[in-house]
Each structure stands twice: as C-alpha cells, then as structure tokens.
Amino acid sequence: MDVKEEDTSEESKKNHISYYKSLAKVISDIQKEKDHEGEPAIKSHLTNRIEAMEKDMKRIRDMFPDIREEEWNGYTN
Image 1 (cartoon, rainbow, N blue to C red):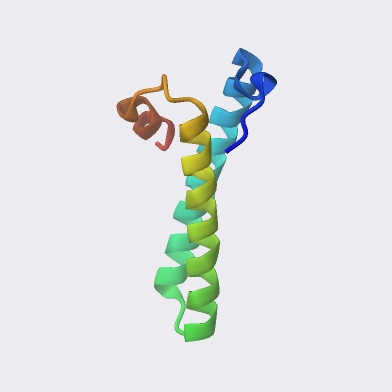
Image 2 (cartoon, rainbow, N blue to C red):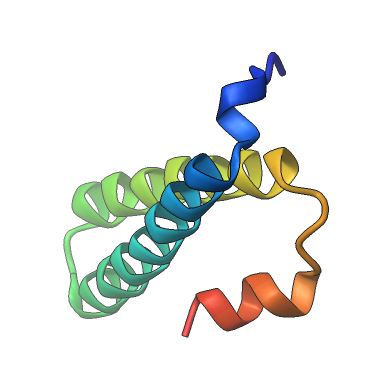
C-alpha cells in the first residue's frame, strides 16, 4: 500500500479516525438491516457492502500503526 506522508499527518489522522468511526456506525446500521432482511439477494448485497467497509477500516488502521487495538475499539463505540 502506498501511503503518502501527508496521509499520516496529525490532521489526516484526525480525519481518518472520524471516517473510521462513521464506517463503524454504518456497518452497525447495515448489519441491523441485514438481520431483518429476508431476501437472499439483498442480504448478499449488504454483506458485500460490510466487507468493503471493513477492508477500508483495516486500511486506515494499517496507516496508523501507532494507535493501539484498544484505542481503535474505543473509536467504534
């Protein structure tokens, strides 16, 4: 993964953490929707969306290895 220096600046870190939080909330909301959905095609689509967002969350965590796992977990609440 190519990470530019400006991508890991303090401002970028703050913005990425905010985005990470929003992804966690969206994933939670989609999971609730998926739990109530009966149509297999829609469930599959929602699963794919969750997986894509989880990959993005991993990418963000990889960009900021100095943040401990416990801190990331705190960001998801």
